[in-house]
Length: 349
Image (cartoon, rainbow, N blue to C red):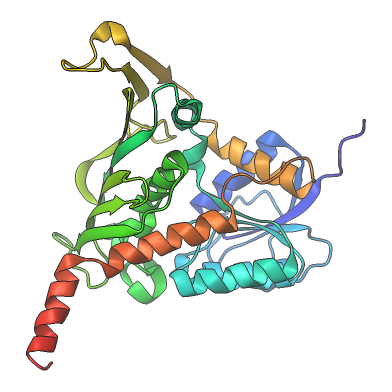
């Protein structure tokens, strides 16, 4: 059986993420990177350079496009590429807001092309294990989840487009917390229709660019709850995801990354007794995951989907719509914003 011909791909945005995606495509095979574009390219680009993004989008010899651009460019780059007949792999966030996401979904349905969003956290080995445990129901149904995801940034973080809400769309929630929200939806298997939140800029005090988000969510049909703290004032990078079920729990501390700043990826699975006290050490299993293949796994699925070898199961438009609706609900239900608006209305402002 002969292998399918390599897909000719162009990469729009050849900064850090564009280079990560290019390396992953080379590692998994099945792609020929024929053009890249960025407004500021490194000196040693190993691929032909396109003069504009549109040169890639409108090239009839290019099969698919990888979009690795700042947030404000994601929606126009996706829709232009889909309308040009290209299959698309795009970085997160899926859009700046739910209205943009709805337009992307409309164009996607109209064109029938493949659109996959990059949420590589789903492909970490510990997350795959957690999802398998939940689906097996060996520990019962999910009762609640708690996620903490934080990093430290300095003033240089705000020297570019990220400091402008019109270009970034938001702060730490869209930049990083969105990954944890995606994991809540992925592992819990439900949406959240009740949301309470506190969104603030406690330290950097940048209008519209939050540095902390505290959010509580509930699926009112099942009662499943989730709690998120997304922050850029952690001062030491941190990733922690806890999933508590009827007969046990899973606690993931750390996430294996190239920078190693989030520590080792260690998952503890506990089988609880029916009554107190909690599980003993003999009822716990600890799993260590020393390697990160998430980037390759993600690109491999995209390759297989556009070749018709499998059905897309991650990073779908449906996932993105639900995710952006949840992001928007968190922003809209910020209790401080609501209280301030209420006071302004009461005062006639």
